[in-house]
Image (tube, rainbow, N blue to C red):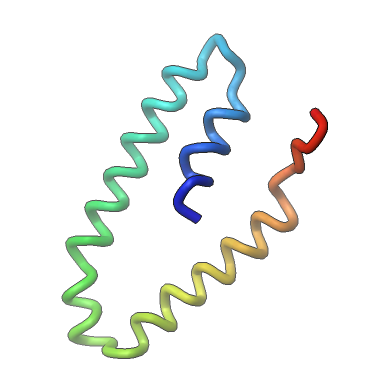
Length: 76
């Protein structure tokens, strides 16, 4: 899932606003990465193995979302 956060935004925005949109994307990505890193150990202490099920659930939700809502660009 790592490359999708960088690849998809760089492909979906028109050239006129692509640099600004990509900078917002990078900022939001880094903010959420920081937040996950800050709360991970606390969640691990409280949820133990359930934390990995928590993240697995969100990977599953992301997979369903991408399958249904991300348009294919093959041959475009």
